Length: 172
Image 1 (spheres, rainbow, N blue to C red):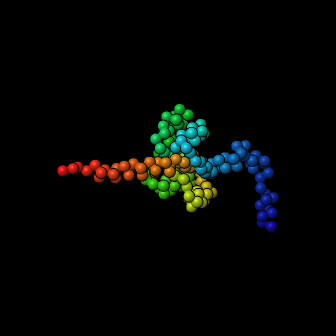
Image 2: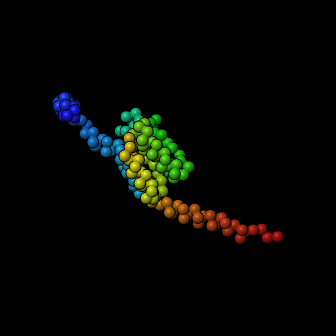
Image 3: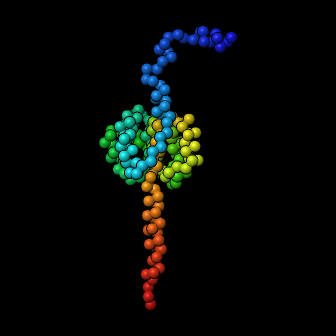
């Protein structure tokens, strides 16, 4: 009975119940997390979203970049018109800290976009991001490095070459 009275007394003006900006699409865009696999360390993907980041940077909130590789992102963003005084760089020490920083930036309410560079995510990390997505208040992009196995292989090959230095010991 009380519910019926509340509905009956609600304002009837249609402008009070509709949003001309299509609130559903804004919420979907702002609260979504996209994971992409990159063969270019995220250079192509960042270029694709740079115009959108420029628009978001002029709204006064942060564009957060977490552990970006040296791909010339500053010049790329500046050329797209991103306000560089609204870009916040976070350098994480490992993958755990990277995902934690992303989670905090997405739900803080002070960021409009959060982009992080990471290795390939496992199923646990993907589940964690799905949970974060429910309360995210910013657009999130995870750029997974498809060439990560090549980087690690190069490091191990380099290390084996250095470990063979004992072959060149001095002869007396």
